[in-house]
Amino acid sequence: MKQPRRIDALALDSYQRAARVVLANHLITRVYPDRIALPLVRRWATELREDLADLFGYRLEVTETTARLFPVHDRLDDARPARSVNDRVFDRRRYAYLALALAALGRAGDQITLSELAEQVADYAGRIDGLELSTERAADRDAFVDAVGWLGARGALTLADGDAGGWASDPEAGEALYDIDRPVVFALFRPPRALQHLHSVRGLLADEAEQTAADQARRVRRALVERPVVYLEDLSPAERALLGQDRVVGEVEYCTGLRAERRAEGVALIDTSGRLSDTRFPGTGTLAQVALLLIGEIADAVLDLDNPLPRLPAPDPAEDALIAQLDAAIPASGVFAPLAEEPDSDTDEDLDDSEPAVLPFLEHTWVRSTVTALTDRYGATFAAQWQADPGALTDEVLALLARLRLVRPVPDGVLVLPALARYRGAVVTVRVRKTEELFVTAADTGGTGVGGN
Image 1 (cartoon, helix red, strand yellow):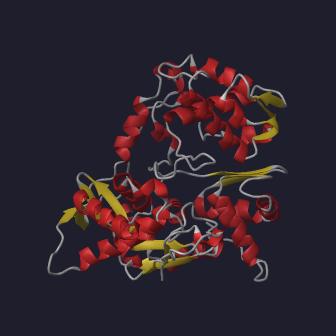
Image 2 (cartoon, one colour):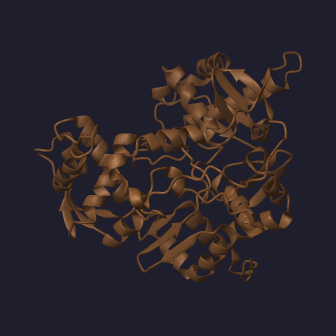
Image 3 (tube, helix red, strand yellow):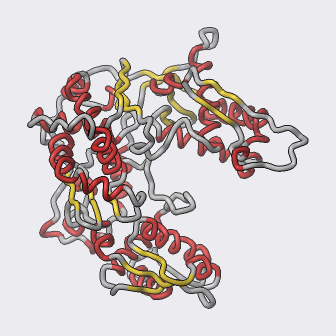
């Protein structure tokens, strides 16, 4: 594999910003993620196309109106779900409506009304067992509008007239007209293989049988840019050796402009730019702030020598269970059997006979009581929706920490992962409002102010 090209020092920052934008947003349009992203990527299209292929095995296609990155997935990741414009996590129904809306738009003209699109999606949904879109149900309308809004945010649809919210409230009185950007629609859904030829989602993952040195190095580089933290325990012995090489990590640092932070347990890329991370942490908002407060409490519990925490071996990854769940949902009638391939379960991966990691364990009751105590102490500064529901707040905070790979949920509690120690020295400052304040400015709406070092 050839070395990535060297960029002129004066232009390196621009190149690295373009690389971060592409790696963070696999689809780039005139409006998504913003209006400056596409011109930036187009400027560096040639260099990015070659470097992303050499370093990661990714394919980049750039046109006048879109840039589309086709990544290689080494594993399934359920930590980055699609979200609505209101930050609502997509459920199965929203995903289904999104897929069916894309199918309908692929056959549509240059414009379509929201009611026409809903009618076509409802027709498609009626052919699928267990799925339905009824415009008479508010929940169905809301889910459908979320899917349409996701497409609109990426430029596949542009509102020409009307209001989707009005239609969602009353489809008899409200309506919306959309312009369809066909290149964006076609760029959105480009699976690496025809789904009708698969009867397991394993077919969408990288071939684990590819074990040349170049393939293994690409797997390590992909892990660095796709995971918040790359733990040695997650890698094969050969990949662990590659992660320890300055050259492999340095190539990713040079391409992205990020700094690698090394610890005995693994490596993490630190993104101070905020242009590669999908979740900025530490951050603003109640969940991020409570998460940082909880980290401090967890770190104190781990370091308490007088009351040592129990330690449990880390369980095997739950990917097999997730694959089984997804495979069970594949309709057998939709698979073209002559072209379907049986998943190959026999791989030539290096055998790993090392002892599994043993990690501190905290019971869920301890976590819940700690979040409740934090709510009692700082709850007046939290968002109103969380003040009266510490249970839901606990669940959401743990989900955030799990996405960041700082804790790992297990039955009855969580295991504390090594990267959490990075924030044990965080400085927390809580601003207390004066009772005589009559007006709240925009700067005051943040509640708890938290900063990390």
